[in-house]
Length: 173
Image (tube, rainbow, N blue to C red; front, side, top):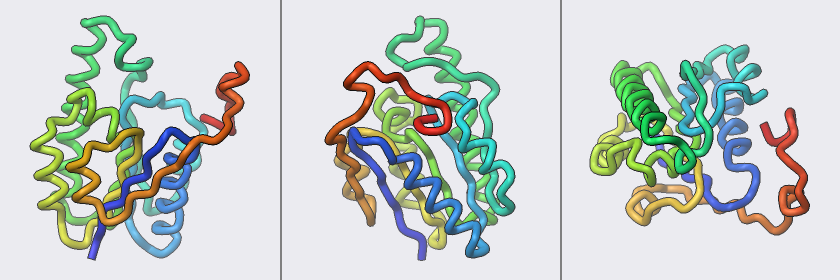
């Protein structure tokens, strides 16, 4: 039986927790589909995930900045690209060959309407019974929390960014 996980909160480590689960699942013989919204394609974890048998990363053609800072034209492009990604995720899952689906930064994509709310909720309610689904991001919608079986909040107590230290390659990305 597959369950739904949410890793949320304002702390560092949501994606890392999801990646840890992906590696554990692959190491146990499970097939993992790893996807992400609103993040760049140059993160170190993607390079290593691509090398792990049983994990497939759906890469995007282009990376964008924070959604709210994009021009209207760029937001249109992003919406189109993520609609195509959502369709690809749905197609892949319908094949029945995946044991784990990870959607990194799902909450932001959901919040900005890059994933249609009713469609996302229907997908989660009607997912294949054996499929484990992991969603990450800040501020999950209450409907998502109610659907989830696990909700883990990662809370920031202290972070170097607060002292002006920018994200560092290999540590934050």
